[in-house]
Length: 296
Image (cartoon, rainbow, N blue to C red; front, side):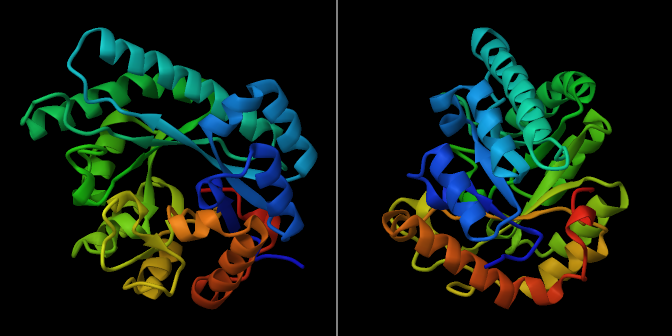
């Protein structure tokens, strides 16, 4: 059994799997790459995690997550900078352990409004400043920082960066080591999204393409409103075609936060993900050999 060569299993889709279990499920289902999260890596330690990745033969499509940059200057902001430097180092080590020396990508989530502040513009300015401060460190480590815009429903508590255009602005201000994440769940609603995907592609800024669906009604915990492709309202064809036309040739992650999937067996979920990807995403992808899917 084999999955599409560009399909990557984001570890969040089987949240309760350990790192070792996630790698086992991905390889067993014929996946060639995986998107990792820092917490399961920390559970086993970076050195052992790198050994497990190397033994799996999988590429590492990304590490999630860094970010949370909106604190006012002071101790909290310094702690965020220090943590993100560690995340850059982790990304480089894990990607190097991956098959073919996977291109290191660290996903950045900006962070929400700090404390009782209502200064949204100021929070976004701090994100731009901090990403710019991190960019030289990332470039030296060979890591691409990938700014991920989140749907505006999350602006208060998770990410003051809400549109792909805002994310590109931050990346362009920071320099060549910073790109963006195009996540269908977060950008599908934006009337400017196709133009912004083309803009990101023109400057080589698309560092990751992630897919899942938008479910309605939105659950009480809005973080868990993601679904398998085809279960919600997103039309994946124009988004995928735009990403392809923009020149992105890398792995495509399926990242789903969904309690029903988390409660199901890991094997069942990875099989469903592969089937839906083949049905709804793969038809809009050009034919490519696995060795060709690592570049931006």
